[in-house]
Image (cartoon, rainbow, N blue to C red):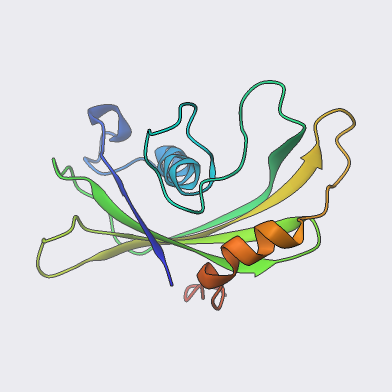
Length: 157
């Protein structure tokens, strides 16, 4: 099962070539990841059932990015409707997980276009000392329905 997160594009996401800049792609992935996995600041703000990580200042456990890989399949032109970003978990390790993404054209746009594939490895660490913190069974159980094969990058040499 995959999560669907809609992320709007900002005018500042584009470069002189009139498509989403490669550095801004990391921001789009970050926004989708936050909506999918980080708990909202206030109760009732909505969000996905997977949005349980506490990212507020003073949290006991934090997440850090260990690795990111992006494959650009087609330039993303300016669109007023938000991109449809599909997220899933490609792997849950002892203290890490791999979040996988596919960025598609907005919902309802036909034909549906796949623009980008990506993967981010996140490591859970104890905020006080930066040491890896095992992902507990409750969290594994919550995320289990969203685990499927990792993203397959087609353009590897």
